[in-house]
Image (cartoon, rainbow, N blue to C red; front, side):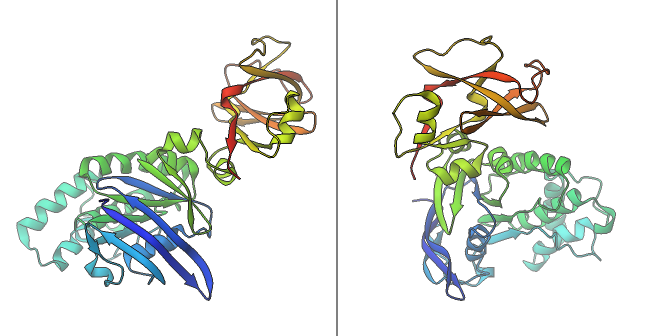
Length: 342
């Protein structure tokens, strides 16, 4: 039996269905992510698990207990919010120790646990600092330590890095993953950021309109989207109607279907330099209508007939003379064209 079970949970606000009999299961020690656009129900589900929102139907089971209607404090659930919610008049040490004091622990037992947790989140030497003296990233680590130190059965994180700048956010993503592995704690992380979900997760649940659109390991979600919504949301897939793709390649194979092609699997070349189409691929011609630098990736937007395809290449692997209005050849491997459920 799974450690956390969400069984056909329904939640409505003012008659509007936000969670539509959603079901999922989390194993002990996993870091799973609820990923989806704003308004899809992911934060509402987190609040239902925590007991901050009462469900309108279904069950929530945690560690073989039915917690569906338990008060929040009786659930064994911790939560970290986007806002740090630290006590401004308390030091780092006092903020982290607060939950243990509420549990009635005293003296040396608190001191040992706090030292261990502060070391785990990388804040050694900051014990005497106040929140106003810390960076945003350091404050979020304090909030994480304060929630983890009481050893909840599951820790819920509701877009905790949203307010941080990109560099700090990426650093904390990796640190969170390391902290979770060291502690073995079960965590559920909510985000709308696809890259963040792919970076930190053991498994991802893609949420759309209050239901699970697809679940799986990050590589599976990224490379094998189950439907058009996931393909458009999880990455930068080229999503085409079957008839549109048939017009490109001249083969009537996909009528009535929807297709997804990752931009990095398409090979781009000038004057046939990078090989030719064969039985395992299609070769088409197109004109560059856009060039975008995305860090170590160059994204070329190519028009072929009436279709637009994005093609990603390493920015040191192509001649930078490829600019707008350049004619190029595109080679599309047949086994990289994914047929989607509608």
